[in-house]
Structure formats: C-alpha cells, structure tokens
Length: 199
Image 1 (spheres, rainbow, N blue to C red):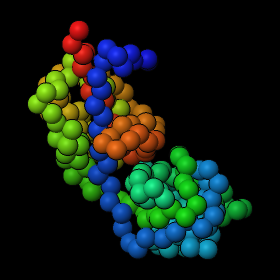
Image 2: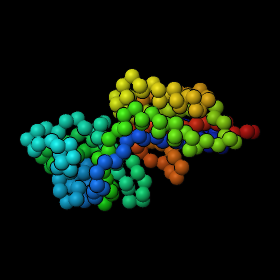
Image 3: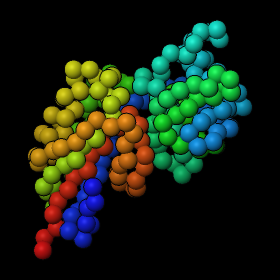
C-alpha cells in the first residue's frame, strides 16, 4: 500500500507489554539477526541460565514467551523473538537485527496486562486537532498466542479509543512509527491512524 503524504496525515503508535527481567547484559558478538555471544559467553547459555534449562536438555520454543528486550546503541528499545537455535555454534537466531554492543535482557509478558499497553500507546498520540478517518492495526501473532481468547479485547480497546473504522491483520514482525522514529518490532501492537488532509 502506498500513501500520498501530501493528501494523508498519519500518526503512529506501538504497544509492547513485555517487561525486561534480570540484569542487563551486553551482546559481545552478533551478525545481523544471529547472536553468538552475550558477555563473552555463548548466547544459548544466556537463555539456559535464566530459564533453568539443563545443558543436556533441548531449548524449548521460547521466542514468544521470552523475547529479548534490546536497547540499541542509539537508545531505541525493541523486542526480538527467538526464531531458532544453532546448537553447533551455540547461537540464537532472532526475528530481527540485534546490534553488537546493544544491551539486552530476557523479557516476559505481563499476562493480560499487555492489553492495557494498547490503550496507553493510543493516549500518547492523542491530539484534539487530529481526527482519524481510518486506522490500520497490526498486532503481532505472538500476542494472540499469549492472550488466547482475550486477544479480541486489544482490538476492541483500540476501536473504543480510536473511534474510527479499523482494519488490519496479525503480523509476524511489525514496522511501526512512534514519537521519535520508525523501527522493526516483534511482540508489538502497531497502529497507524490516517486522516485526509483538508484541501
């Protein structure tokens, strides 16, 4: 979809709801979306330590429940879901770029409280001079898996706060705007509010 910015005004919001747990660590070796070392140790060991997984046990599917909270070098905080494990290289493969020297923590969802973050994100971009004609919503599919039957409540809450028609779909990686910039996200509820500019 292409939008003519001369005719359409857009406001963006993003909501997380996961919270970092434990001490911040430093990514000491990575390449694009693969993290090899954290604090100079194999990345797999970082997850094993926090999730109490024995060395001889396989790492379970952890990408949705325990994504990585990443503070990039420029201060941007994003969440990265684990897509896979390279046991031979003791590396973790993520759904997005993880910079070397970025600060990281494992994060966990706050149960159904993550729904409240959708409303909070929309309140942050409220402007009495801006009335959206339509909203595009892109919740991460992981939110649906974590919330189960409660996932509809996020959409209902967005509709209640936006007061405009909404359309969207569950995504697997979201590109979203927020006050301060744009970024690629995981585990996020991204909203784009569109309004036709006056002629």
